[in-house]
Length: 472
Image 1 (cartoon, helix red, strand yellow):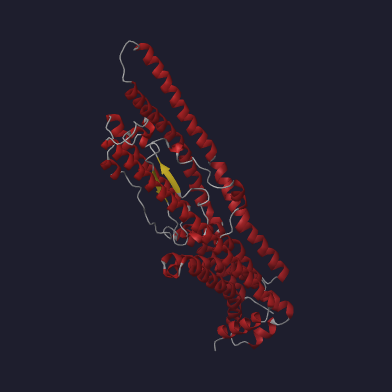
Image 2 (cartoon, helix red, strand yellow):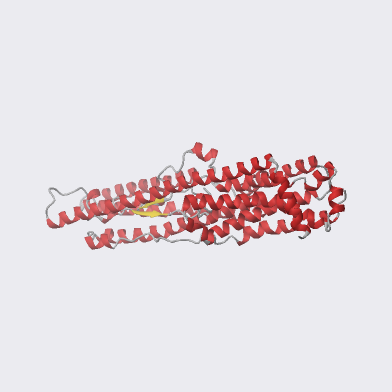
């Protein structure tokens, strides 16, 4: 048996007799399974929202078709008002015939909340300006947003490294303080390989428990087929690489030859900096360099622009009435054209407000992305959110598709409304549909993984040098 395997086997037997080790691993496994259970419940709620919205849309469109058939057949008891008339394109596209744009949860959505608590999974697209439908509903209870959610990403980023550090922080220091290091170096055929094997046993215990618990929980709550997917392979790679980073850090500090208390204090400080201070500093610096208005300010500005467009419409109408008071007018037709003109003015002004907000936010995000390589914890969380389909890139793509579909939807209805063409059953059958895309959740993860791998390799080099310099 090689010295490495012998050291690993001996350390595994030692850890097996330690109740504290079993307690720590049990708590880690319980936290993972609990987070996946709550994540599965959250995903089920999102699926139900999407299904209910689609069912409501189908029922609503079918009701419009039935009313239209009665009107065309002359079976209607009375003429409906314009805002309920399925033939009126100006009103139907603004609400009664609104199309649902939905973002279906990814297969591993239970692993991370990500951006899903900030953006609704369902949006009803109308011919109105974006502020009238994109920010119309409350997304989440502010108290819930403030307290956060317990998801697998949280457990991996914050709890998982603590267990690794607890087991690996004093391999050399502990043996030196207990007087066993000299015996290990003297009795082993290859002392450095033996010590490396003992370290591997301490690291593989939490890493293996985490991977196994994640696999069991995902198979139980998301289906066994997900385990064979590329997304789960990416998830396992993230967990393994993040664990190796903390193991390499613990070994590098232990290789300095200091006491166990020094190692513990140093690693706790490193944990606080990497997982808390660095992400907070990055976000603060990006916000200071490129301050973007809050979403509330943006919504208020967009609605103010819509109100200004209404006032400008009313003023123009008053002038026109004074100048053409003697002319005979088609008031119904004028009302439709005024409504369309107001919508177009509001649309242009709101688009300008949103574009300005998004441009500033993009600059802020770009700076935050560049600075995020300072914190492997932040990179890991973003990678986990991406593999769960709840990352920023996927939701930005969703909003971009909504914007493109909004233009198509407006063109479909406003072209008919301006021409005075009545909607027909064929038009309802030809209503534009929001494109449903199944994005590759693990796309674009190379940069975050490289950002964790590089410091891991550097720390591993320092750790190896520490092992070569070890003295009893």
